Image (cartoon, rainbow, N blue to C red; front, side):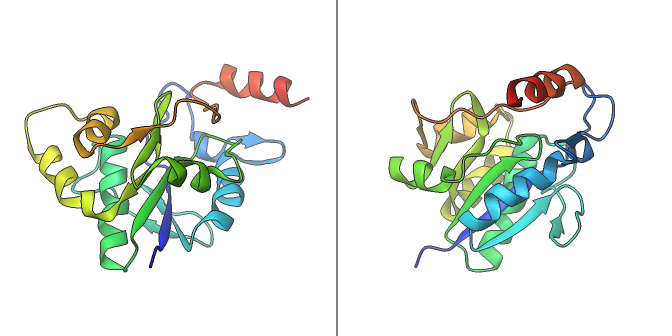
Length: 179
């Protein structure tokens, strides 16, 4: 049976943003709350990786903090393995316009799929967990794209665009685009 764990990655330092961007206000609500609302209906359970957030289970990065997005994906895959999930849908906390059918679009491509423009948005099978942990222990690249290539994840080449927020200017542009 396919059971999907949603994982909102929220462990970054927000250095380009200058403050905690997960809690930055957009349309009167925190960015992370927009992501929660979009992802929760698409998955069987939802966690936040790298922090605590009201009403959701927080999971620390794995195997250690400060490994970037791969540490968040590793934590989510580990949690999914321990709790009987088959896949993890990962989305960063700074993407307020997550499509309401993101999981369907990713799973239509294959058991492992990602957005090439924003590779942290992906669907990852739990059987990739040992591969990711080996990659994190090794000397090679620690990019999400390298992980995706290593496990044969398929890129979605059309139909899904997700804007993410890295700076206050990005947030201001999104607000203008929304109006």
